[in-house]
Amino acid sequence: MSTTADGGAETRTVTVTEDAASQALSLLEGEGMDTDVAGLRLFVQQGGCAGLSYGMRFDDAPEDDDIVVDAHGLRVFVDPASEQYIAGSELDYESGLQAAGFNVENPNVEAECGCGESFRT
Image 1: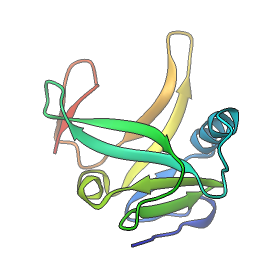
Image 2 (image 1 turned 30 degrees about the vertical axis):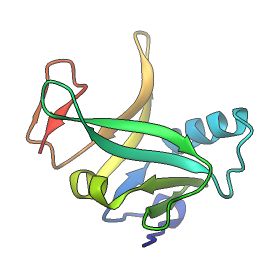
Image 3 (image 1 turned 90 degrees about the vertical axis):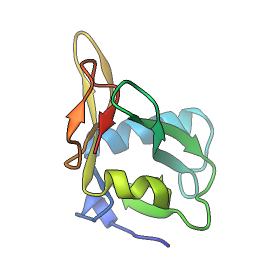
């Protein structure tokens, strides 16, 4: 299954801010990956004190059953099992004096752990 949102338009699965897309594309290119095919995989895994946590990694290409979101030139791959937990989420990149990194704003979260590393839906 493939879902495409050109330019970050609203989709059911996930939206991506321009800052997040720009940062991820820069990192992909730094790894020598072809940004026309490769992308950022966003997934949910068991773990953390609240039960679930986010994971991200670069993949050379999507899997056959992945949902693919195209936003600001970045391809984001989401597997069907993770999609049920992150539908409607926004991926952003934040930088500040104390920390910098990707952040998932998830409207499905009912509770988060104190450190913000895991969640429960």
